[in-house]
Amino acid sequence: MLCARQPSVKGRRLDLLPPTSLQVARGELLLVTGDRQDQRTALALVLSGRMRPDGGTVSWDGSAGIRPLRRAAALVDSPGVNEPEQHLSVADLVTEDLALVPRRYRGALLSKPWLKVNRFEDVAGLWTEQLPPARRTELLTALALANPGTDLLVVDSPDRHGADPAGWLPRLRELAYDGGRPLAVVATVTALPDGWTGPSAAIGNADRRSSPGSFCTDDGHKTPPTSEYVDENSGLTGEVAK
Image (spheres, rainbow, N blue to C red):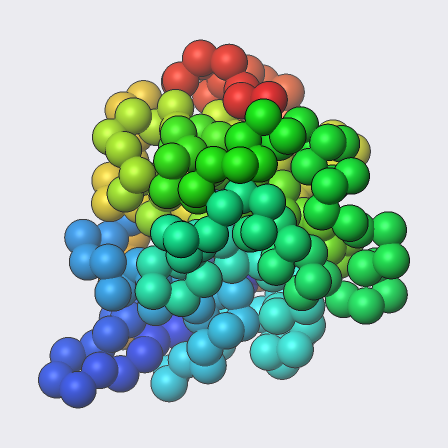
């Protein structure tokens, strides 16, 4: 389980990230809303262990250190941080990203076989900026999961690529609810999609007067959501992207 108890990041004048509390377990997709891109990115960096908060804590499976969180988390498509460069082809992006997978897993990861096995051969020659939103989300999350140690996906502002949540929501739901490899998935967004009834939070939601212990009373593993919960949210944007 990912547990954030009022993490905050200072800016020059105002907080870059105001205190925000949330939790998400394996088998869950949490959407976190925020009006400002810099705040959404700051939260994504903190939740993925790429930035230390100035206040508050973030823990993964009960471990408060940043190393366990960073090992478990993959930051996906964060603008100005690790979003694909426009001049890269899909094939080149795959080659670069697979080279970042920990060495003990890297031997079997070659770009051409990976593209074929994961069904991206048809877009290998495209520039990354030419990918439709759904294919972009599918590609970048698949690359994040090339590391078998990834248990947490933090996707930064996937709705910036288009107003239709069909470009990202079905894929993230699919990954969170995968019975074979359920993931904890967090996406920062501008606003909740119409009809969304799943878990959500808002940047700056932490009341400074509340106790940090009021969140995440159980930091251990949690079971995936019930089939009724999945069914309730499965009709928001049509079929899951394959």
